Length: 113
Ligand SMILES: [Zn+2]
Image (cartoon, rainbow, N blue to C red):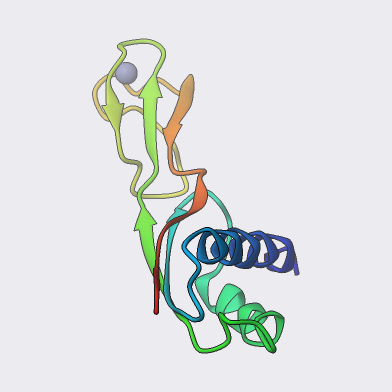
């Protein structure tokens, strides 16, 4: 379950932010998850449930924002969002592609009390 380490870092970032803001409670954490990150929000929620116990984030709501995958074709330089597992440029059918976005996973914002 590789969600455990990402959840740990989400929690760590949120707690650090809250400390800086001198907050006593974290009510909400917004997480941006790229479609290519391979993380399941359900697994993150599950891990968060027990990792956040006894912290000021124990009652925080996790809110996920999916970021779609974006690829760039090396042949025609077109950027597109792949809609299946078969990656092919829709304009020139090139298969030499690079990932522009969709791999990131990060805390985008937190709400505190
Ligand atoms: Zn192309």
